[in-house]
Figure 1 (tube, rainbow, N blue to C red):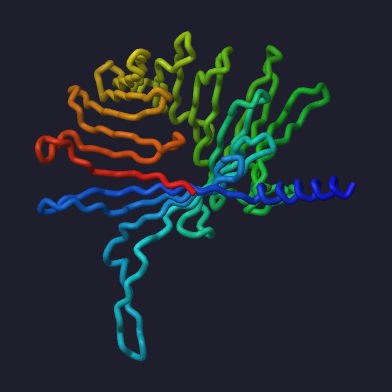
Figure 2 (cartoon, rainbow, N blue to C red; figure 1 turned 90 degrees about the horizontal axis):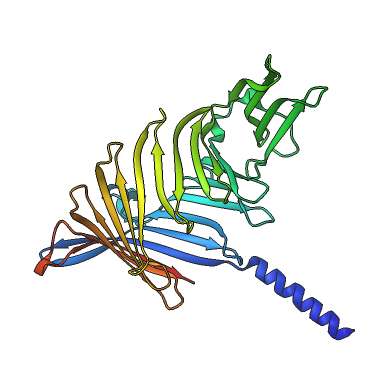
Length: 355
């Protein structure tokens, strides 16, 4: 009995440890410059990402390192003596926070500026009953209309729930639908029955805080069929998708707010060479650019080459992985400006470091 208790205590202890375990990834971006034959690598941006024990992102921060010279120094008064002090050459630019439900689905994402008091926007995710993403809505809490406030149990800005209510008439037909966040009605729809007995939308109200809403539709095979972006009830763009018999994407059409095609991406696959080609064309089917992607035996990208509308190679990226298959580096080359001995010029390096 004593041994069983000890095992139980150990299990609880380990569970508590695992619950608090976080893993990290640091992404660093370097800009490459050359002066008088000397190559210089300057760290310009870095991203620090934290994961929980289930490898779900908890938060991430983007830092800028190439702060202008005028902001790297400040004057300090030491007993009426003015001195110039160099500041740390790094500044947090953006900070994201993520939350998940019990099923492990992402339910909210929050963006802050350079400090946690500068809330930029909140994004909420909602799913169909089969677990597929239904819609994403982004809004700016600072622009919420105070007249749309309602009383709900919690209005803590750090714990903003997403809910909805339905009102019905005596026959059980829906009359009104409201969606709210943190005690504010963001969208409301009033329905009516027309002369043919069909339920129709009578009016819609959208809060001015809404920045964007994206809704997702799927075909009978569960594949993403259409994605529509809208703002305050008006479509601002959409995409639809086509697939081959293997379930691979073969075409994406991009539409503008008027419903006209802006561009089309067509995908071609070469299974023998493990290569994928993405062709982007305008509405007249004129080539905008083409991207050739070479993959390794694990189906991971290792080379990405971009060609312009004249089929000139303008950019090339080489991608590397560590011994366990994690992304470790990306080298970005400018192919229009050959360097010494005709070699491509390296312009950017991105590295990935894991704890």
